Image (tube, helix red, strand yellow):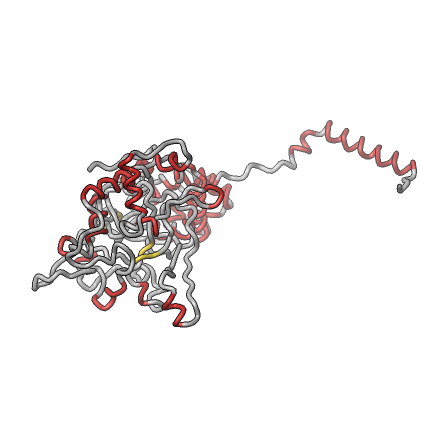
Length: 413
């Protein structure tokens, strides 16, 4: 064993004693080294989320279109929400729920190098990203769009947003988080506003409560009724609804409860909705991954045109507007369209001047072949029998009711 000189040991002990004595008799010096608590970004984000003063009208906040009482979805049955300086401008797409979005993956699309492998890999779909067309990889990135969109909160610039922030009730907390001069750096202030809004959405339990009957059943705390169980069977059956192929229902890693979506993109051929003012122009088409809002993929993959990201079905029974264009206002109509799109298209699509049904009328004629006709039940033929009867639809709706969180209400039917 190594030996230390007695003098060195005594000197070390004395130094330790002196240090301890200094700590005991100088509490102010010790306190001076303690850092101030980090700003609560989620609390700042919550204040901003409910702040209508950030809009040009002074009457519209994030919560206006993403109501917590409606599972952070739209509070009404409008196909698209109204915004702008006078709250009279209509957007292009329905407002999605903001619940259960923390696990959304980054936008991605990968494909094999050879044409042969690409043709064989028919299930390879683009996936991920926020909004209906996946053009943002985080809520922080996405936040600037509604703030600056003339059809939504309608600020004219980042400077406009920074000025409004500087007058808000939480302006000082914002300065403490991002610097006392933050409002003199408007581009950064806008980006930081996105960060706090993301912190609120990712950290507040109200965005992912997992409090539905479905969750209790997954945990073995409750059981489905016979009607709900039959609805789940129809929902999952690959030869019937086949819904679970996109709206995943099984637990994930470490028992994580599913978000009821695979985050992939599909082309369902939802009919054109004339409630949207932009659709009154016969030359206008909302083609999802191909624009008009997303521009980076239009020239890459023509078969992307018409694709929209698969939404979560959690709290779907609370909604009064369905699909990216808000075409249907009841859950029942949405389900009927899904199983009767190909067997009875005359019930769902418009007709031309000659009385002929214009199937997939919300895409240009040369792109209608993009619509999915290979996945069950979208393979059915004209005049065939829908895979669900009226009774089946009621049972599927009963199952979908179990996806409603405890604090949300099922929409009236």
